[in-house]
Image (cartoon, rainbow, N blue to C red; front, side, top):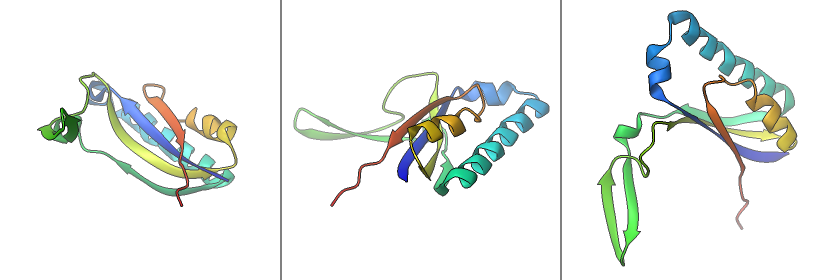
Length: 115
């Protein structure tokens, strides 16, 4: 099994402008994703994230540490949440990621074992 972090990015205006039926479709897609992961591997954790406007960014600039409010990059999309999963391989991770809402951009990254 390989451990993957599945990052979910979307434009928050998509959710805000969605009908109740469309919002239910998003919820159902997450349930399908979770069931597919459970069938092929296991979920280690997941969480939705607060809006990008709540972010605090720490940067190293010119030998100094600069702390600012807001996201690290200006973009219409924001990282909305994540799943920490173990699956047999990248093909399985891509297969289950296809079940998430089509309005999302999904990034899948294997984790690195340290030590």
